[in-house]
Image (cartoon, rainbow, N blue to C red):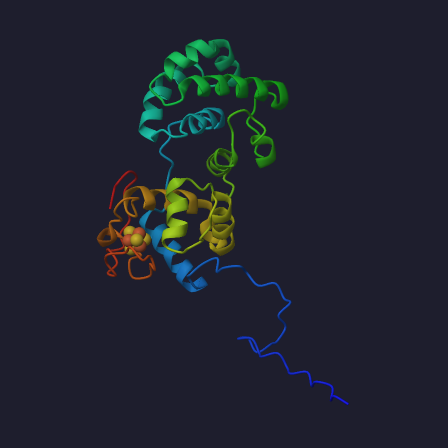
Length: 256
Ligand code: SF4
């Protein structure tokens, strides 16, 4: 009779266990230790204590309109158009009274202006109809508005309502992946990764600090690593310097 085969123990995993059924993360959500992440955001906070967005606005409504208009456009280009527009229409009611054709005339220099004029009027209508003309401080309600996606909603929640949201734009998406800070295939994956790792005390301004870092230092084509205050911590394959730039406070609008 054939002897029953002895069960051989499964080889131990790296953590000493042999339980292969436990779900394990598909990939690391950050190449950085909590201490490194803390130090990165501490340095950004010294450099830019009160970072501001660069879209001009006078209230939550004009901020919402400016962010909607900024899709695939530069902040400077949007500001040029919205300066005169917001002088005549800074509430949903005034915007509606202005009408789609006149709004279109103000924003004609911005890409996709026809569609954006339509959305600005439709979202003004929706705000009056569903929210008494006020911008809602709630993600689910914001994304129901015409032309408002998750990124736009998160910018508005962060800037107008002071919520610690993370709106992932092209700069933040690049930084999350280039540095391995919060790798992800989609903006939402990067958003969730960043929210998981950024210390709560730095969440409120993390969005703007990352955008400004991406726009002026960790640029898309050629990162300016010699001007970077986190060059010694950064683990990006493309980095060209490991010597951190001097950590000094920058005046608003100042470029390192
Ligand atoms: S060292 Fe270079 S690649 Fe790394 S964050 Fe700074 S600018 Fe970007």
